[in-house]
Amino acid sequence: MTLRGAIVLIAAVAAVPQIEYFRFERPIVSNAPATGQTCLVLDPQIFSHAAPFLADLRLYRDGTETPYAIHRAAPVESAQKPIAPLNLGKRGGQTVFDAAMPEGNYADVQLAVIAQNFIAAVAVSGSQAESGGGETKLGSYTIFDLTRQKLGRSTVLHLPNSDFRYLHFRIAGPLQPESITGLTVERLPAGRPKYVTVAESARMVQQGRNSVVEFTVPAHVPVDRIVFVPGAEPVNFSRDVSVAIVPIVQRPASDAEPPAPIPSSFGNLLRVHGVQDGHRIEEERLAIDAPGNELDTSAQWKIEIDNGDDRPIQLQSVRLEMIERDLCFDASASAGFTLYYGDSALQAPRYDYARLFAFEAAAI
Image (tube, rainbow, N blue to C red; front, side, top):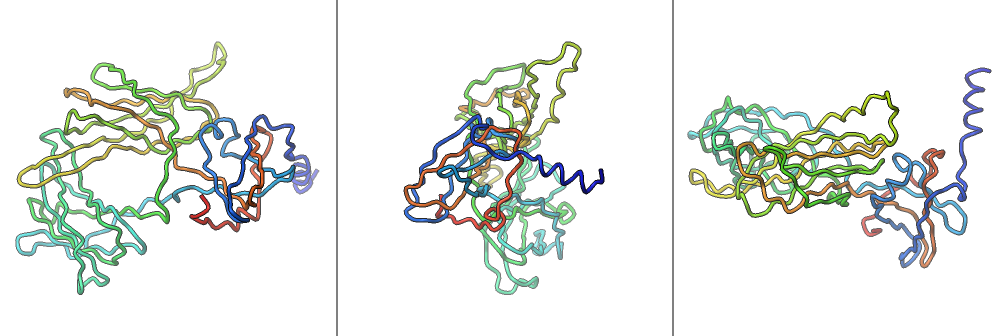
């Protein structure tokens, strides 16, 4: 048999959706006032019972398959390349420099600073020309490194939503020009990220110096970030966090090796409120990125906060969250639809509707 013939044969025997083979179904009643786009939030339970990446998800109306599209509530942003400082030097006793910014909207800017144990004030303005003509003041921000006090560091400038082609920086404090090596910028997505809670726990246990919370995450359920809700004490802290994920094997063979943990991810929790050397500091970083793996098996998540020699954080809860995914389709008023899933033999559908899909914010 030729390669071409083999490909044709494989296509011919590909599984075709049949309602009786789906293990799960969920009725959907459209509340659309008229024919048009409708979007429904997909909850974690659907992910746990469906095939990987929702490949077997099918929507029917009166026994007829209805095309749909999966919309992610925030587009994935690629990592930004470092931006080199321009015209870096000293002026009026302050370190100054400019930066050519990428096109489009951006918000948080992080300075790359090779120094420790400092507090400095950074005044930022924006313009459309490198020369700085017609500058718009964006604000003054405090950056710090409190390594000596074991309170971490923050060199992030929380700018308002901006699209200036050039930013101009003046740093008042101990930082010299050679301490500034560049910056990175967080591009704003087209829509504000929305999150759905996958799991939440207030049960913390102490293991030595570490505060530990564990979760069991079902197969196929994505986790995009971990959110920590601290209590009042301690007021200020900087703690490293590690996340280990171990797949759960239901019936391992007697001679089988135990499943290897997925490489851990790391982050840092930070809360600093107060006045340091005359500078008011209000900085919080209470969420970390999660690996986001959609495993083919359930997994045990172990989240550890390293308290060092300090007292543990009074955590009220820890949440695993995924970015909201929506099922979008063209609906009619009062039309009844049924969502089917749970047939692992199916491949992901290919619809013109999905290829030509344009999300309408009013559809949710």
